[in-house]
Image (cartoon, rainbow, N blue to C red; front, side):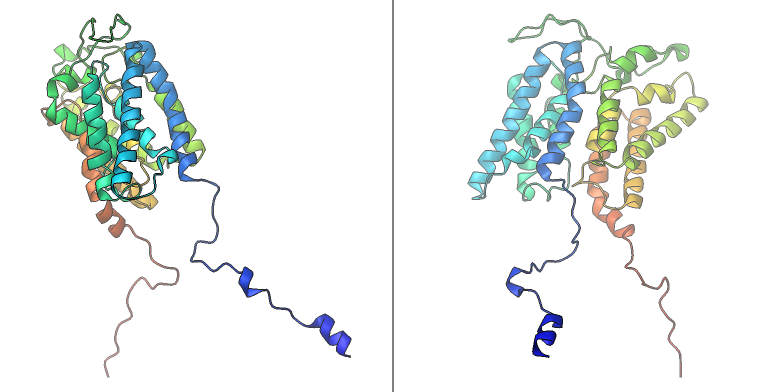
Length: 343
């Protein structure tokens, strides 16, 4: 009888081997390092296209920005007495995005200043990765645009790659959005040139196929949500389509806006930042629509032809409010509070 009882006795597990933790208990295999390097991999086609159109100095600008961002983060973490986690790739990604948002004619020392601003004022001052309210690369780009407007708005024509390390000997060219007036509705650039990137602009923003390839790659891996780029681009297309229908001689058609400037780069790689964008799908849609409205308003009625950077930063500041407005309710929560029964 004793033997029979011992065989059917319920045995409790060894409590010393139990791991007690808060939810969620289901985790994916993704890590910060894997996500960052997947995004960097997705950006490589656009970087290669930028080097092809603007010459080897484009690679130098990208390399300086990446190295400066990594060095600044190492310096900041050591000054703050924290462990260095630069191997997660976040600093390298910030530098790569910053370099892609700069003209190829940007001097090296300005690249270093922009990288320092992006890391120190855009990221580390708030506590590091995960605590920054604004996209660090856009913080650096906008700071350079305000401090050095002439340098940040000097463009060269693609395929004129007679560049030197000390200076640039090439043909300057206005960007598609820099041409403010349309003569009798005639577009200054063809859609084919806009699509392939044969126009003036920043290093990594002109070649649409390379950006689409990287963006679709990230969506397929579930690293970014499709809601942000789709609703962002759709909002710009709708608003610019209406304005072009009302004033075709003054306002460019929607496809011209979609293929011009940094819209594709911003929609797929800047507005989809996990830290600075809303958490829920509904919030992501609100965020994307807001970016599209602000971008269209700045492009059409603002004095600055490009509005992607400013619109994303403005919506970054509204992300906490969007999260609060679009937060879901726990399961079982009644939609309406029960009424009090008066005696």
